[in-house]
Length: 371
Image (cartoon, rainbow, N blue to C red; front, side):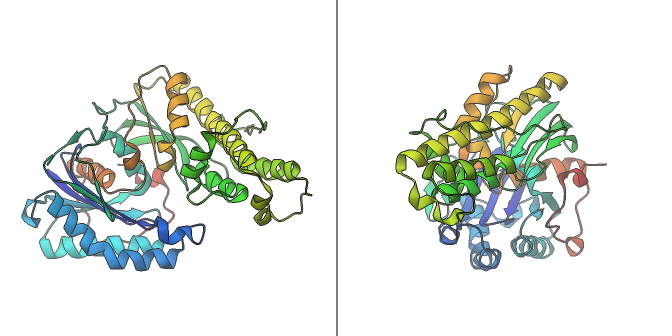
């Protein structure tokens, strides 16, 4: 079964064709990072307008890269929740229109659940064609996992908007065990990067700066919570702010926007390394706690922060099962993960009426469990 996936939940316009839930035939991502970097974050209205400009070319390129026509597509999967309402509307409107015009089954997909399914992509098809990624070309191969995860599967989902630990008993059968009580870890990376003067997005820029920093210079706290499997990153972010203010010799009422210019490159690198060490330790310690209590057969990480190499290294050291990580360019937003999950939806659920699909910008993943 060949599934066309469409993803426009935030600032990437993406389309992909995946066969049988695990074979990538094409994967096209048009990123808006350069546009939003000027503002230090995503501007919703700008994101929506950018999606309008490229949605049709991106979908057409996904078909062309896969060497397929519309007759070859068996079903369509599209992200409808959660995300920016304007961005979600563009992708779902495109998918609904195509489903009606081409008479294709349509499945609305939850974006966060889809991130987990980047780990189910294990094979490249169409090896003779090059696969597009915005203005450039992706190589014809990814470093994909060799096998799909086994159930029960523990998923650590970490991104700009989410930090969750979810136990999957099977496709569509899962339970939320823990989550952030305040900031998501990706959001904390972005905010700390802004404080110390590193560019948006914060995850990659902090990881790069941390490579030459000393993670033991600044002692930062881990939150102590009543929820055994929950996270908190708001206090860590504030601790970085206070530590920076102390380091440069200003009072706590000094505006955070003016701190970066007072830091040296050495200090900036040390703060990045110290923050990353504490954030990663928080994630790994909590994941290990869940693993020891539930003994799942496999562990995966998903979401943009799953591309962090320090997180991957520490998780592999602390979890006593082999973890096969999805390639970094499938951890960030893409449509291959949407198409993969769409395949499993098609095996177990009836398609939705295109006329009935509405976007759900803040829908919890727990509300999409298959009944």
